[in-house]
Length: 295
Image 1 (cartoon, helix red, strand yellow):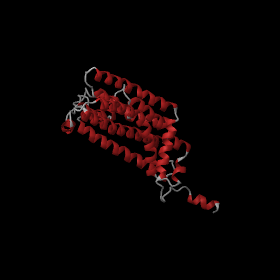
Image 2 (cartoon, one colour):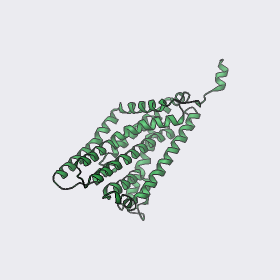
Image 3 (cartoon, one colour):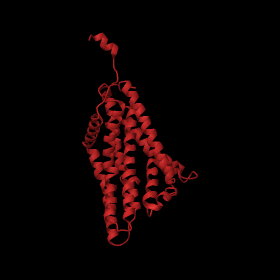
Image 4 (tube, helix red, strand yellow):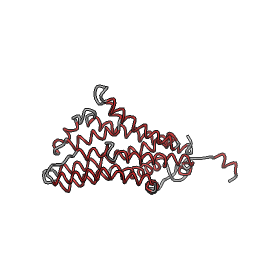
C-alpha cells in the first residue's frame, strides 16, 4: 500500500465485531490505574473514619439499650462529615486521569481504531471508575449497615435488611453518577483542569444552591437538581421513616425534611438525571470515536 492511499483513507473508527473481554480489560485497567494513586487510597482511608465512628456509636448505644439511630447510616452517604466528600475527591482525580488524560495524550484514536467501539469504552471506563468511587461511598456505610443486621433482634431485623439494601442500591447509584460526571467532564473539556472543574460545578453548585435557596423559594424543589439531596431524600424515606415492609411505599410519598423533596419525586429525578447523563456521555464519546478523539 503506497503512501498516497494511506493519506486518502485517513482515520476510520472501528466498526467490526468486538470481543466481550474488551470492557472487562478496560474496567480493570481503569480501576488499577486509579488505585495506584496516593490520593485515591488516602480518600478511601478517609472515608472509613466517619463510618468507624458511627459504627462505634451504634455498637455502644445497642449495648446500653439506647436503641439505634438509623439516620446516621443514611447520613453517611450524603452529609459533609460522611463518605460523600472522599468519594467526590476520587471522582475528581478520575476526571483528570481517565478520559481527559486519554484525550490529552491522543490515545482515543488508538482505542477506537482497534476492536473498541464507543459502548465498550464508556462501559469499561465507567465500570472501573465507579468501582473505585464505590470503595469510598458504598463500602464504609455498608459495613455499618451490616453491623446493624448482626446486632438486630427479631423485631428489627427486617428494618436492618431494608437499610442494608437501600444503602447498597443508593450508594451504587451515587458512585455510578459521580463516575459518569467525571467521564463527561473529560469528554466535554478535554483537559484535566476543565474536566475537574466541570465535575465540581455539576455537583457542588446545585448542592450549595439547594441548601441556600430552600429557605428562599416556596418548597424544596431546587433540591431536585442536587444529587446529594436526591439520594438523601430517598435514603431517609426508606431507612429512617420505614418501620416495616408495609410502610415502605407509604414513606416514599412523604417529605423527609423541609429542605428535601418527597422521595418519589427524588426517585424520578434520579432516573432522569442518570438517563440524561448516560445519553450525553455516550453521544459525546461516539462523536469522539468517529472524529479520532479530536472533536
